[in-house]
Length: 414
Image (tube, rainbow, N blue to C red; front, side):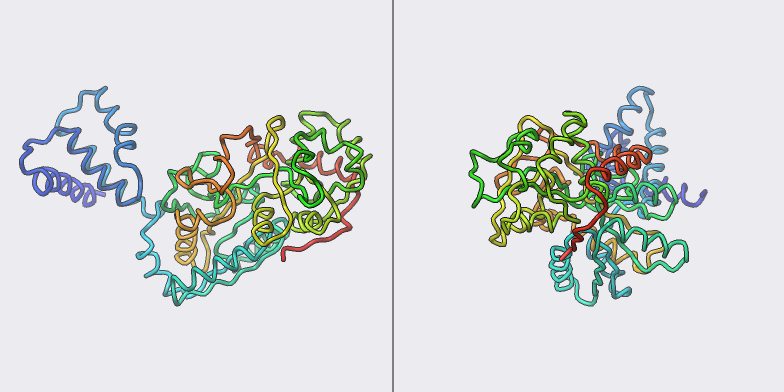
């Protein structure tokens, strides 16, 4: 530590008084700190001026620090900078140089696989020499595979992308996730990421109303959850199983919180169909087997619409729109950690995020065409609190299964 501190002092003195500001001698404490802190944060991809004012300059003003205090604090800043590389992202070129030696990436992803297969193909073209193997499936099935690998100390997966946010919360608590903050981390709302970088949203999804525009006119589309109780939709409602799918459970609970359990009795009287997985739900609407749902996933609906399937979206001005982050995390014992960092950094880049087919967690990426920024809507953004409340989830799953019965109409991710 003595050597590190001595070197940091030397760097603070030379870089400020010599290399960077030969005309400013002696430099003020705030000037010294601003430059060294700016250099550090620039290397981490952060906003130097904002962090400087919040963390350094304001406390200095209160204490009236002199030039020597500037050198001390500046040295400490450089120490922090030198020891932060494990958490903050590196440049794509730096990561690629390391990832090429690993040659492969094992990615587990929940939900429809096709979008990630397309992303993997593009990534492999951009970064030759790295092959991505994707294991797709339902998040609440793949998480058990990962748990088994961790228990056996035979981890195969590098990077997981799931809707089951609670898995990342408990994996962080168990100390098995790698803290990593890719470029753009500061552009992401705190509700969509872990403050230490253990996990981070790569998409923001929502559960708007979806209907078949060939069979339901726009003026007749549901505007509130109460509209789904109308007799004209009898035997034409569809949803995933709330006892099986966490996002569906979250969506149904959002409705129940507002309208009470009597709503569920009336909803069931309209004879809805239940299908495992949202891809099956939205395909049933596209085929005309069912007409409407309040349990969609907007990214799937927009993808099907882009492919020419009849899908129309309606967002209520009366009822809150349930939103939730699709989350990614890298494991500490990942066989290919640099390949995982490279893919996550690349996927969270502005160019990729502008083409993911739903809202980006980054505030500096425009929303999909025809939509407003997600947080400008009336939203229910309580997914993390909801999904980590184990006793509530157990109680709700049991109660909803009494309505729907066990899973019968099984679905898939392709």
